[in-house]
Image (cartoon, rainbow, N blue to C red):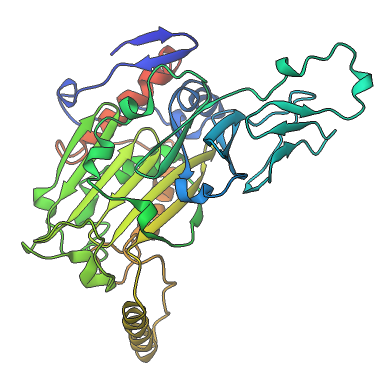
Length: 408
C-alpha cells in the first residue's frame, strides 16, 4: 500500500481485504495514549480525509452555520442562497477564530475582535477605520475556501478547496448501500453527546468488531443472526449487514414499537452498519437511520455524537408509543429496579432488549483504554473472520501516519 502525493494531500491506496491474510493487532499502545501520535493523526489523517460535519437539514435556512474541527483546522459551513459554502474559520485580519458551535449569522459573518465583516460568499465586505489600512485590497482578503459536499443528507467538508478525491469517489459504496433512505424526509431526534474516556480508535474498532455481538450485546441485540453476518471493505470503508434471525421479521420494530421507515423493504429486514473512514459510524435498521461520530479531543478523550432519524409519526403512532413506554416504566418500578434513561428508540437498542447498546460500547472502549496503562497489557489472538476488519482499519491508519508510525 503506497502513498501518492497529490498537491499538498496524501491519497492512500485502497486496501483490499485479500491483502490481510489473518486478523492481528498492528498498532502500538502509544497510538492510543501518546500526544505525539495523536498530533500525527490530526495532521496526516484527519486533515487529508473528508470529515463529517452534520446533517443537511441542520443547515436549512440562509445564514445557518456549523463549525467543525478537521484535525488542527477550524472549518465553518454556512448556508447561502446558492447552497452550502465552507471556509477556514479564521479572520483574515488577526487570525481569530470567527465562529463557534452552530447558529445563524444572518447575511454576513462578523469577527468579534475588530468587526471585520465577510459576506456569506466569503468576500471581505467591511473594515472599520478603513483609513488605517492604506492600499488595502479587499479582493485579496476574503475567507480562505474549503470544500463542502453532501451525500444521503450528510454534510462533509475537506480542508482543501480542491480535494484530490471528490466526496462521491471517497465514499465508495457507502451511499448505494443505504438504498433510497432519505434522512431529510425523516424526523430527527435531539442529538446525543457523550464524552468517552478512551481513544477514538477504540470506539471505531469496537464498532467494526463482529465477534463482540454475541457477547457484549447478548441481551441488548436480539433477533439478528450474527452467524450470517457479512462485511466487506469499500475503499477505506467498512460495510456490514446481517439478516433477521426469523425471516420476514423486523427485529428493531419489535423492540421499539416505531413505524417502519418509508424505504424499508417488504419481507423483513435486519441491519446495515458502516464505517465511513476514519471515524463516522452509520447504522440503518427497519425503523431508524443513525450516524455515530467519534470526534477525537485528546489521546484518551473522544466526543461521541449520535444522530437518530425515525419515520414521521401520526398522532395514533405517538400515542401508541407513549403508552408502550409508560407501561415499560411501570413494570420497572413494580420490580423496584432503576428505570433506565430512555435513549433514542432504535438507535441504541436496535433489535434488542432493555439494555443500552451504546453504553455497553462505551464501557468496552474505556475498559481497554484503562488496561493500556498496565505494563502487562497485550492483545492476543484475534477472531480470524469476525475481527479482521480491525486489522484492515489499522492498516489504513498506518497508511496515513506513515513511516513515523512504523517507528513506534
